[in-house]
Length: 111
Image (cartoon, rainbow, N blue to C red; front, side):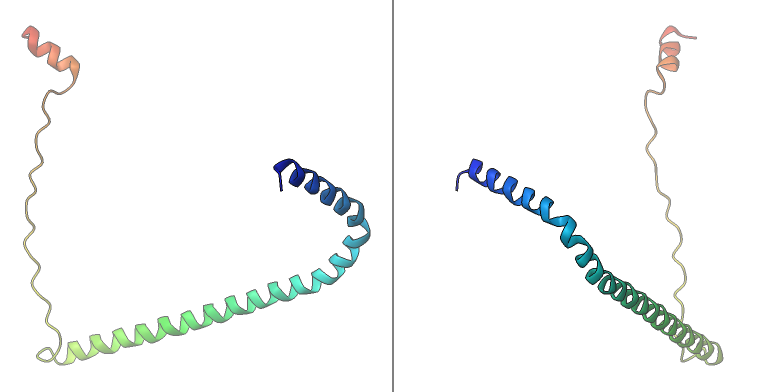
């Protein structure tokens, strides 16, 4: 189909939708509102369930870490030994050459 024919078809369909929309809109709204409300309610329930499950997992992990720390504190020979921290290494930052134009001009003049 040529583009102009598609354009005309779009105009006809749009005009038809504009004519029939006022008579159909109340029925669509009536039928769509309960569905949308149910979707929002389900999303809220899922969000709550996720928050509860996340809190339970965080609590289980905290218990696990506390047990590991308690075991490490009571039996240092069997626990994981911490490696000594490595000495910090010095990083050499190269000096900036030139500086500001004002100082460079002053050096050239000898002041």
